[in-house]
Length: 478
Image 1 (spheres, one colour):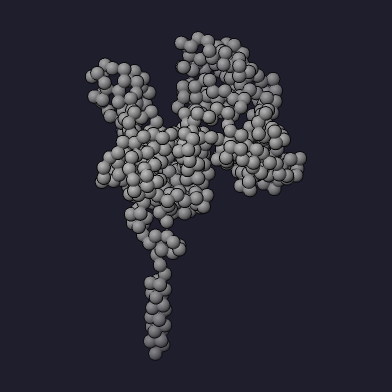
Image 2: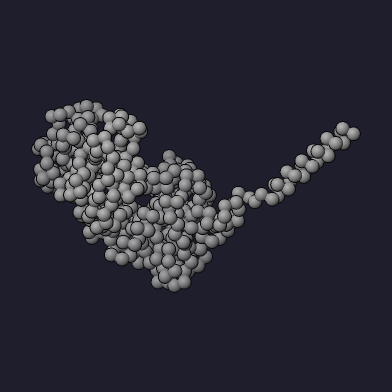
């Protein structure tokens, strides 16, 4: 009898578990408003993601050494022979073809893609999956954010609804859609692995990191949430092999659509700026300021006659937030300000002399940003005459922040493009340029004058390397 009772209890418990199991919806069904299957998400979004191919005329006399590597050429979908060269390989120019993806964002033919997909293209072709091909017009590009806007002459097109990317959370499921390696439209699934990433590929970046597979050809494709809404545009990967290794990056919609609106209405991006040089706050600085933990960014320099200067910001202030949005690092401050409207008055919560207070700053347009997408923005008191290199005049505050000798003179290197000749010769951010062509340079004017001489020879630099605590000579091809 006991065995029978025990058996009934077991059977009853099993039945209850089965009832519960059948009553609980699948993971994809649980969140209110979410589509019931990944197939539903794909079906809803794939028609609005297009393949983009471009024709680019390039100088055949210049070829980067990497282009001699067949694996590198295949990574970028470039032919392995010279049959594409004009005049049977004897001409000055050749035609290159590249592949990418794009996102239809309006029924009348506006398409979002990456700047690097259409950059320098003589023709841009847009193809819908299994449908006709269109030739597209480039409306505008913005290299600092790697965003481009193109348009085709068509109506009643499928398009994606835009989500507020600030609502995306780490761990949310996302789907990447694009044309990897030119094999055709493909969807991959993953999660938002991290937010607010800056990997140094763009001047302004607030990237979404995802483990959804992104490969060459996915650039410009869509990253969507489980409601089938656009949260980001696929832009880059970190990889040792050239293929996906689970670290992909997408430009969030809030940044991309801010750029799109400017490109569509005024033809270029109007960026606001503060006019300060920020520095990350570490634990030692937080202890000095009496803060419980590192927060905000420290102002190391306020430039004269800038919005920050006019508002009364000072060297040594710590900016905690902008319009209630907490600032975590210098890159975030730059992004938040640049996405604000020119002329807008923003509220900065700051720490000054151990106490918190609010400062209101009337933002102005970043000098050099007018005329648009093809200009790399530069803060006041910076110079970019040497290709791929940004320098600033040294100040006592900067010497202290960079732990440089008190008697150090020269120009501080604040940025080096990873693909520039200067980077290849070993110039790095944080170095100090002391001489150009054996002439001392302690001002931006002297730097420009020295670079203007001997244009046919490499730029000969004497550079102090803080990591080595000594000076070296570098010759940078022009």
